[in-house]
Image (cartoon, rainbow, N blue to C red; front, side, top):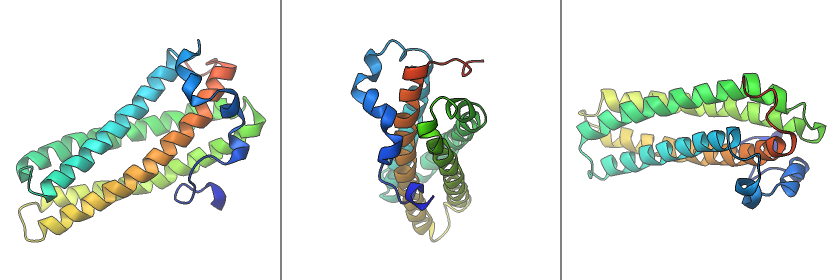
Length: 189
């Protein structure tokens, strides 16, 4: 599955873009099936992107001494915990409910759901790395070497942002067309 690995791909392979060709992104909001579940789900993705961008901006601000260490620590603890917990819950719902239902809707893209599940495992490892690094920053923010830890956190967040954006974009371009074409039956319980 190397051509589908999150760290290596730069978009959905053509074989998984068949429904996206029928339902291009620029037409989603005008589709009658967009409101409700699709809009809610995309809003969750937007929340993850915004939280991660705030965490990145805060880390850079702390690194450049534009944000006081105590203020950064408070925001990192609160927003970092929210980001990790909500993303784990979101992935759990997708892995255990959405993906099994949606993968049966169109055999041409079933392999894409295996790819998305593998992405979640990759992202879980990155989230663990972020959590470890963030906790280290929080524990040792007043010690020598705190700037090195902040630089490590900033790098961890940059990598996580790149991988998460790739995953979310590919997930959206695989799942939204499926829902627009086949509906939400079996997804809302």
